[in-house]
Image (cartoon, rainbow, N blue to C red; front, side, top):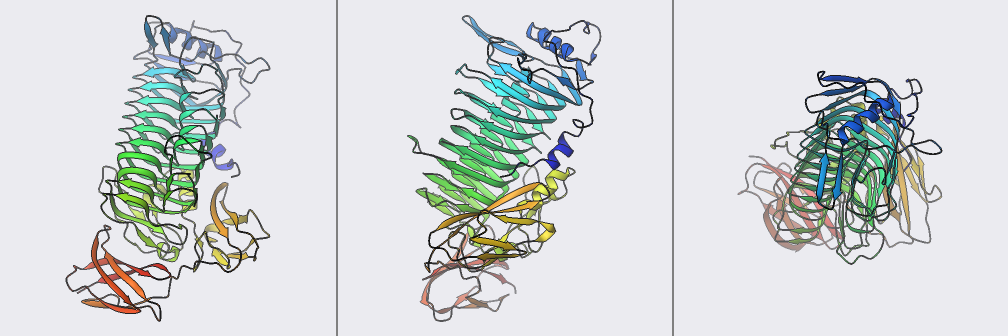
Length: 614
């Protein structure tokens, strides 16, 4: 996926291009600006910022005091011989115990840029690395960081974040990082912004760039490890790769609240858990989030079961409300799903329209594996996904409802409900688009609105499934989006037409849709020959609709095996064997409302909607 620059630079780093080139830190520290009586201190040089680090690391927490950064600063990490930055606050482990020196004041970055932070593991015997090493009962806001280098070789339990290594009982907001981060050794708790957070709040912040390291664990674009923390109104545009527990937003999250966030990019790992939003989640509330072009996969055999999910890799006792993924691919060698790879959870108002790889042993358009879970008003796109809603469902309640792209983009509600949780949200329907959440459509930041719009742009495969393409199909051109193909000789885009050329070998093609500087990918597999599995969207007739007491299903000459009806909560309310090309369904005992009709035929599963009105 191409790097996205224009929107990020214009919104998150607006002052970088306009500011004068700052003086480069000379490696010394200046503490002369401090006195014990004042409560507000304004720093103008990198040397004064280094003085803050010296004082905090010697026991002055700055509790009750406010620090303001008045100028851009360059910390010398890009010099031929880079200057080593000592984190502000640290955790030092000795033979007699652990010594914490935390920053506990208020730091206002004033949207000034802090550039070229170089962190070297021998600068201090600490295990927490970032601009700030350790903070407790602090507030950090309006901080812009560009270019962070971690030159760390200690393979112990280390927490690394571009802004903060470890935070407790603290809050950060309007903090943005742009950097490519590389790690050579086995580290735990790596975050684009924060390594580990406990009982804290992270809001209105973003990470843009890349995080790489083959042996890293607990890695996230915002946060590596979250405990009883709230993450809201944040986004990540990055490619993230590591060993295990790799998430687009958070690596591992426990007892936390994650809402109003999005991820654009690739999350890639070798072992255990991979998630477009969260890799490993326990008793979290995950609400109002979406993922664009999340590519999650395990590259090779693992000694432990591996799970990959578009939203969550592996979850335990979570509540997922109002989350969705459109486009991209979810791939794993064991268990993968569009929303969750494996979980015991409650799914409410979620949907997926993503390509599920055929490589795993338990694959589902929504979930690979569910254990003792509840599914309410959760939907999948039958054209894009090639599997049932859940690969393996043990002791679960409810069922995933499948629709075709034309139905999910009709501009009408197909069962998604308004949230009744602590952060209520409504779905917005527009013809030609998948449903959006109004928290993004009406978001004050342009990047959220444009990412939301891109996320719901569809492709229309007609009577084909995404893993069985041979015929021409349509792409959306709403809002001036443009399309490219990874193989123009196989699929050529002309306006809204995707023209497919006959081939002799099955080939995976990536279609990229661009809106301004944001991009999303759709994966389709073009098949050789005539071995095509068609998805018939208009073959079965259902009438009358609306119905009062009964309706008829007519499938021409093809037999229908069985018919099931579901209410909008996903509960099965009626089932009848058919074994005939037509049948009449009695709905006289059902209350008024919308119902989903699932028809099993010899050629596949078809879905219709019927409204009962008296």
